[in-house]
Image (tube, rainbow, N blue to C red; front, top):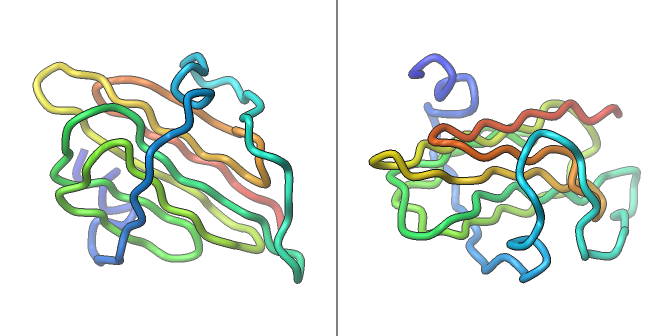
Length: 131
C-alpha cells in the first residue's frame, strides 16, 4: 500500500480544495465504468482540460494522495473532498483509504464527464489524459 500511496504523491504536500458533491454525483452508481455527470462540458482555453478529482463519503480521512500535473497530499481531509485543476494531459490519479471497514468512492471527471469511478475500502482511480 505504501508504494501505491507514494506513487500517487505521498511525498509532497499541496493545498486541497473542499466542496460538497452535487446530489447527482452522490446518486451516481459505483464501479469502474465511466458515467456522465450533471456538470456541463466545458474546456479551458489553451488546449487544457478541466479536471476534478474527488473522494466521496462522510467523515474525515487522514490523507488523500493525488496526481494531476504534480503530486499532492490532502491531510485530515473532510469528505466529500474535491480538487479542481486545468491540465493539458498526463496521468491523473487519486487514492483514498477508508477507516474501519467503511467504503469511500474516488472519481475523476474530465471536461464535465466522469471517466473513472471506484468504491471500496481502498479507492484508487487512475486515468491517462492524452495531450
